[in-house]
Image (cartoon, rainbow, N blue to C red):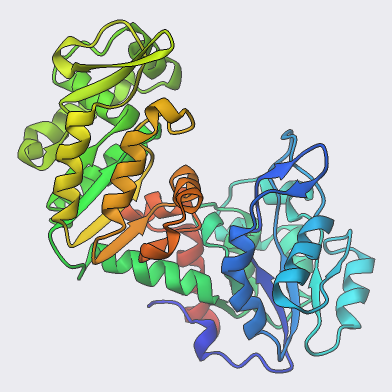
Length: 403
């Protein structure tokens, strides 16, 4: 890897600024954390810094959101998970924060306030510009080493992500290292045949992934489901029905039809689409071929197609999944998503791109069967499109500068 890692770095006795991503689902009324998956994933890195003074930098949500709140509950949740005291401080780099860090002992863990309470952290900027922010300049003075473990935020060009590595020696944490290593294996050296299953509503990103993995010979086939499949249907000249057409218009994805058409023109034999779909007709699930979709919402793959798709998945050595096959929240239309996930879990090497899909897998109790469930949906997708991640670029620059 082009960046330094925590496993090869001496941290004993050092003050470490640890950037993690504890952004989690929260009940705004009670400020209760509803899912602590990211806490569990970052815990090994926090534990590995037991011989250092660990200053945790993280965020929760963003301005104007209902769950944009303080990190007091986050500190308490981390404390329970690692079995060590975690001190929460309602300051980021002010005098209280500086004094608290200066008074830390080896083994102490201190969580600073939600870093997005500082306006600079909410801006997109280059590393050079971030280096000049008050946030980066002041935080850098409080530590000796910066550890970035926040893969979930690796695609963001924000000051603590791209600026701190230029201000001080920086390394990747255990989770960051694992994410990059696993996703790199997807792009090179994964057991074949390699199948990508792209669904959900992020059509533009999914098409970029499909184009990258097919043109690069990374994937043997791409299965498109959900709203992604609807765009491919449109590219084939099929009528997807007024409700699905309206959804594409509302999401701004009608402009992606041309891109889907280009992919089909170049790699048509490698793109697999459901031949039947399920629609809602009143209180019932109805099924029809994609050549005769009525003016009803398309909410899942048809049962015949689910069988065909899962057969392809079961014959794959590697399966990479991102996005559900339909409206899985409704039990009537969860079959496609659930069956595809069950089939993928049996693959020799299986990777899930986080987000909603990861939540479904945990609810089904099959999360342990997957080789890797990413903690960063957006970062994972960007990596698989072949684009570099700002966090990784910054860590590489820090290695060149300081190590």
